[in-house]
Length: 510
Image (cartoon, rainbow, N blue to C red):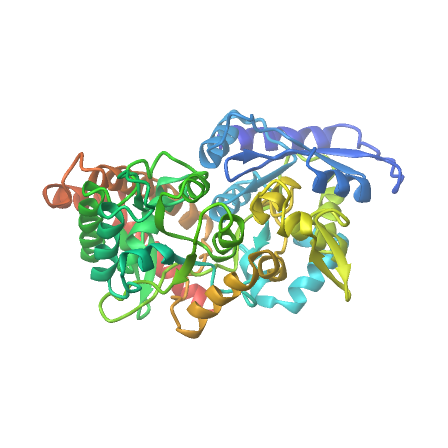
């Protein structure tokens, strides 16, 4: 970060002492190129994807990715970028608090004035949805990033549990309701050959994840446990320091030892769901409604009787809820101090909040991925019934659509490609009040931010390291628990709790 500030100071001195650069504008013909750091779902930004080629045609702006194709871990790649001091024009990042910290330290420039003067579409969006603007404003009052917004108000339920109902029927089992039922069903999937191939190759529970944190969430959610911060009656709590977290990890370690959980759950990656379902070996998961529900149409012709349907979370302590509620946003993008033409960049950001830009990012290329019907974009057969048998979301993303940068999601895209099964799943969770209210993304003062992010990062790394050891049986949580809690406190848990409580109280007061 010192390198970033040193470079920022140097640029200011040069600007003050040298001749001001004159930029000749010829809108409509002049091409501009801006560098961008972005990694989403293990893939670095590719300006040659059709969506961004089309945007280049419409805006005369080309983005050039700076991350190496080998940098599939977004957090590692981001940290490497900052340590290098070689800043691109634009940074997109999934962890918004990291972006705001970077902004408060001078790495990103404030955007509010640029938006007021050159971002009419963003302004109109925030006027319509003040809550979304609140997500963009840092604790010091500046805006350093444009968040990548979820369509929270139209589709709050995001993901839930899916099970092979055809396997239940074959084994004469009822749909599981309690956590004990879930366990017994997974044991049956493991031992009674529900896929009928005469091999003990079934994987009762699997998870599609590219980070240990996401694996952890998918497992302990069954016990309604949080892997991070949450709130109870106004008090902020750190989930991994609680007894219910210990109980959940201990039980999941037992399930893992018995082979009820994918033995490669931490290493298999984002292709897990495709592999498990296409090979007719996966029994249950916790995943996004729309993309997971679509497998019924894709696989029911190749796997006789295939029926993968959503079910409510297991009942635990008298409740059936999931902590996997859709947040209002996830990550965003901002303009760095190194950018030579922030005005053109903010105009480019603003394009994505126009009707044309929003359709392009959400649905892909008109004529190929979607067509206008009754004034609304509708996906084509190429997406919904892909000739190569690809999942609709895969097809959409191959165009560059839904690549997380700083856009505004249209919930209609998810409803369309998810189909009736997805809508039923969303309604199932919504109508049964099975979704817990998500903990908000808090805003920190500069001093709080520096201290909290440092502590929280160390806490996150440590709990993920220990969770993997405990779940995979290389260490015992009962023996380790006291030293584990001591280590959390040594890292700074008490200080982090104080910062979180004060930030939460501020957030609620506003």
